[in-house]
Image 1 (tube, rainbow, N blue to C red):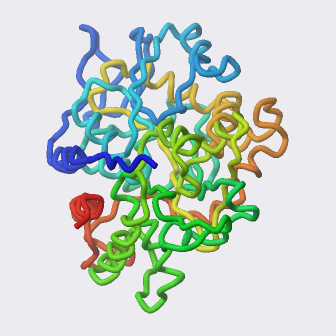
Image 2 (image 1 turned 30 degrees about the vertical axis):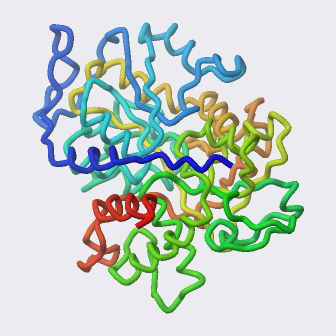
Length: 401
């Protein structure tokens, strides 16, 4: 088992950069962008600038290079003349840092990044009148709190899903029923310990996974929301994570490295994304996934636009393109996610007639979607532990402190 632990002190950069200020959209290429109001929100879409740059999760923007069946970039480029460039990010903190650096148009942000980007003035309000297909978005997502602030939309929903428990079916003849297989030392069904055979996510948002576990198993803590923790609850989650540190062979953040670890390094149970599960299953690996009894954290990703997007017209063209049912269904089939557009669940050859059910469209209420923790608790009271403390504390956990 490879026991390398990748440090992620760079997470601090994303937090510290949040204090930077942003300015309204500026003219690009010598011509005025299609924006006129002082808010910076565009009022019309003009001719494309020839390029759009996107910060995205691995597997989110495919042009058929990995598998020719999965390509939703080539046709967009042909139709619009906007060449798509992609910078893959492994964590939400990396996404925030990259967007704060600038020079990108769009980002596929999860809920633990989206509100940080809004609060930091890094992304601009989206004029949904310029995205005609917005009305086709799942009603549960159209005004979701991770991208809608004071009635203003700061992005376009893209996909959503759960952080599943991925397991080796040779080791677990029956699916695990609890996250305890990755949190507590135990003998697994194959007669061997789980020590050194499990992984955990290399990001401070993993504290919420520990809190969700404690919500069921330590009800005396009174945890109601895994992203809204008072000091006692937060310390309890950290203590659980310190114990997990003794079990973890690697803290993962790269999906493809995790796939390799599952195949070659003896990983048998870990939190993961459906993307890794699907790729491993396609290769014939003994892999399964489940949402255990405690529920799961998850992600509802939103395509957001930088306040100084270099290519605002191409960016808006992509926002509209991203909602077409073919793209949404193909992406859901590829990533194992759920489309933001329900119509994508029907008539998609790659996704199949039951693909959305398989990917968890009925699990929406079981998922605690990623959200940036703040000192203001979910009930409006003060006294919750803010995200910057999650960052420093989790670095300590990984470092063995």
